[in-house]
Image (cartoon, rainbow, N blue to C red; front, side, top):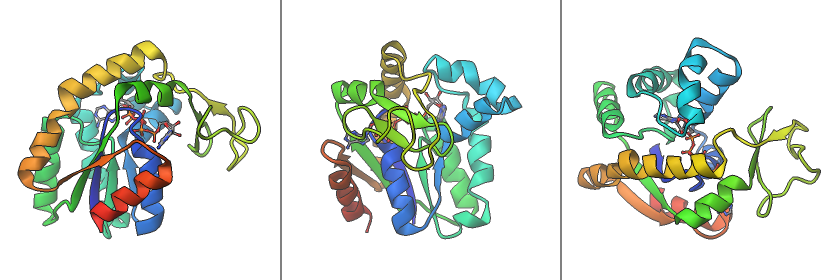
Amino acid sequence: MRLILLGPPGAGKGTQAKLLKEKFKIPQISTGDILRNAVKNNTALGVQADSFMAAGQLVPDDVVIGLIKERIKRDDCDPGFILDGFPRTIVQADKLSETLEAMNLALDRVVDLEVDPEEVINRLTGRSTCSECGGMFHEESRKPKVAHVCDCCGGALAQRQDDNKATILKRLDVYQESTAPLKEFYKKQGNLGTVSAKGSVEEIFSRICELVT
Ligand code: AP5
């Protein structure tokens, strides 16, 4: 199964991708996670991406397209994959279509997670992430048992550098301008499905499963 999760920052793409990964035994490919790891490890990619990410801007298309082309050709993607945070522009979507066509593959579903901006701001300003395993928490909806400590691995929890209100608002603008047009793009291709991303994580997960199976 080859899926794309679309949706604004904080829609729950990462949260739902992790659950889908477990259920369907296919990898979650998050360009945001790949780029954050590169920044953390101070690689050439990280140095290139850092200032864009900190400012809430998109990293240049050619950088992320190269990453995805290489990643989806790996053996673990043979049974399928979940793209979380890619594509984000029409150029990225076109290149993905070209790459899949050249591999004789097709997308099964593009799931658009709909959520309003007020909810996004609440989710992102309250989010903390484990620096070790990437586990995600929220100060209201998913509190860690011990403050600032990951329930899963004991790692330290930290707020993402782009989860402050000013940068969240910038990310929402960038989403409207560059990524929202992808809904029309995939609607025309006939594989867009829309899911309300309001409600509990479990409720949203079951809506997505209904759509993709
Ligand atoms: P990326 O990491 O992709 O961030 P994003 O799209 O802004 O999305 P988030 O990770 O913030 O949110 P999410 O939708 O995954 O929600 P989550 O599940 O975490 O990208 C970051 C940056 O990298 C970009 O700004 C850009 O610079 C760069 N980048 C990445 N990909 C790129 C690309 N393709 N091209 C160019 N640049 C790229 O949930 C959020 C919070 O809400 C959590 O605390 C969670 O616990 C909570 N939550 C989740 N679901 C619920 C629920 N149902 N109810 C209550 N709380 C919930």
